[in-house]
Length: 366
Image 1 (cartoon, rainbow, N blue to C red):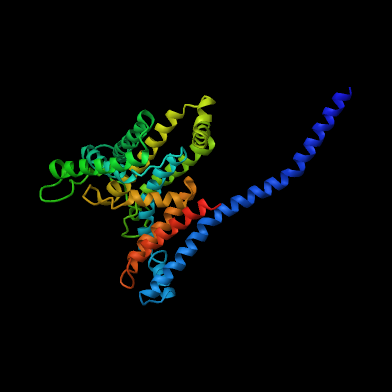
Image 2 (cartoon, rainbow, N blue to C red):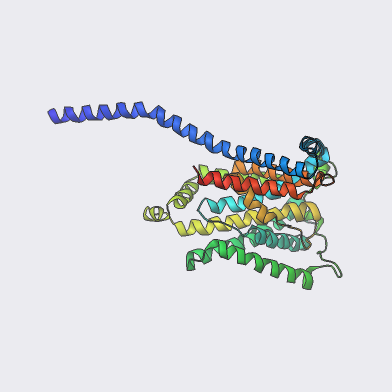
């Protein structure tokens, strides 16, 4: 009887302590979340301050340049379309880094995966019969792009789980392999004679421009592949944060050995994360090949795979925040071109680099 009473008293005291400390814990959690959310904003503000100093060093008024930049980007229908076009590719290459990052894997191979996807999309798009309905033709070409990019990601994942090869090394090397293979295929087999581009894809595989469908962002390269990018973003978020598989993947990323002991098939999640990341990078080819150029040509990807690393870091590898990060980088990329007559666009490339350095530093010094 006495023991039972003591146990009840102990239990009651424990409950009281839990009730007392719960608000403090909640407050601390909210503070940590707010602090984490403000770090990217602070990094962007600091980077813009650095850019202002660089603009002054170039002999220009920062306020004039920033005003001109906003007017020629979001203040212009065409400029907004250009930003959205760049944002589409950056969102997908950002996902290519963010998905494996949930497994504590660092995918540096987005450039090669995008390159392979662009070549595959062009080949599939050329092969699609013109009589095929447009949604089916687009789906075939986009699936080919995802399969090509996903295969490179899966190869890096397999080297990791089978032989313990660091994914940073393998994805970098696969970038060179993809570049060499695509260059050979283009020059030796796919290119129109005396050019560095393939024939145009079938009309059935063409993704319509936003201008043709909605009448906005006139004459810009923005196209409906932005819908695919946003769907990929939301789907990734839902899978990672709203499904059992996503929970197990995150658990395996936090503690690989503990997750394996609990019965989670960590090897499969490593392979799946790398393959999904590669597929996301490959899907970015839909924007470039199916929606913009309607063919594949040398230099089409222009470092977008590497820019995706910066986008993912700024967005804390979160699928929804990556959309905001990609929009910022799309703005800086086109904005730098828009004011290139006044200041070198390299200044805004430096802004991107400074932003990422500050993000990484703030992530280390918690």
